[in-house]
Length: 325
Ligand SMILES: C[S@@+](CC[C@H](N)C(=O)[O-])C[C@H]1O[C@@H](n2cnc3c(N)ncnc32)[C@H](O)[C@@H]1O
Image (cartoon, rainbow, N blue to C red; front, side, top):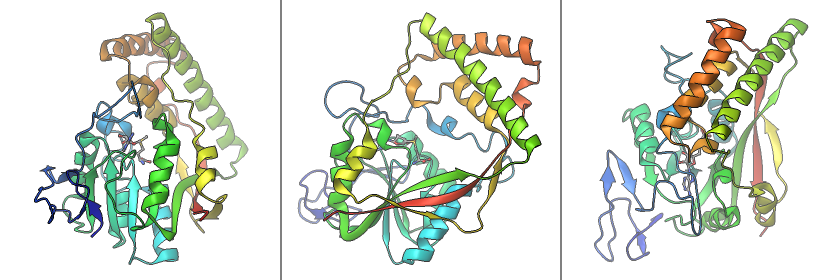
């Protein structure tokens, strides 16, 4: 048994607890291991859950991937490297799983994968994306501050872009260390830039300059409306190193990806407010800031400004942290 009962905290099956008889509720195949707030910006143990962001976090299908809903790129490459190194007879917890971009490729590789997130909206998208194909993928609504998983039960915890969303990362990292087996490890996915031709670099610089220009307008407008960026200053890397040895970085041999849609992607997030630092901003203020930005952009860069292409090329790597104990 791997899970802990939300009610009596004894070891339990995914379906329910043999000891107290509690049945783990599930909503659209998402097992409910907690009923905590979807987002908590006050009091103890704050976090930014993504219920209000949902699929806008990664609008792949809407923009550059209309015919291929299974484009996982760096995440897929990192998942393949994990299975190469550790085999598939392991249990992986993808903590703060988001839309399943790491979980689905891991599950596709045959690994027993728990996609844990505080957001039901996000997890129901994972269920939709997985489309019933992976019985070895479990979607669990859990709070990273209080993982309902047994001590020493997980081989690998994958954590990508979640630790900056909690105000008290040390508590979460302690939870990660608790659930890992003694020889288990924490893995974070990364990418590194690869060299560009002069022309490609020029395109990329222009695209980034436009993005910075438009972001400045957008965030200034929000400030005028009384909203500042919301961020936790939580120094989570320092805290990881209290529990884990410094990481080894392992590149995925032969992987290279070109990404042209930087501007479109970032603008989508500004238009929809799909960014953690905007989580406290009401949608009408997002709409107002966007309208000003859009009008400015059309005048300065032309009606088709959203189609400005960047050019970045990068490789994938995993950062592997072993426990100190
Ligand atoms: C920026 S997204 C990253 C998603 C995914 N790991 C990726 O790399 O694409 C962060 C995710 O962490 C989740 N999250 C935030 N606080 C959490 C908490 N306390 N417990 C579990 N998940 C949390 C959010 O709901 C969101 O889906």
